[in-house]
Length: 69
Image (cartoon, rainbow, N blue to C red; front, side, top):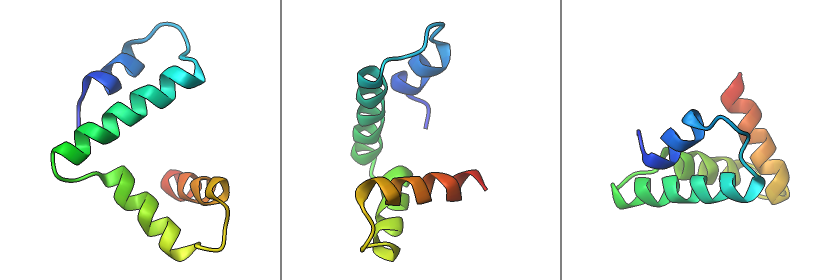
């Protein structure tokens, strides 16, 4: 799962802007999809299937909290 986007985020000395972070994560998602599987997308779709009545932001927050615990 190593990629240039991930490496750039880790190696960066200064905090990334929101736009840079979004761009890096989109590139990572595209790389994973081209490789045939995206754990991030699979996890997101799984959360959406369980919490379909919740807003997009709430589903992301639930998924983020579940990943931490």
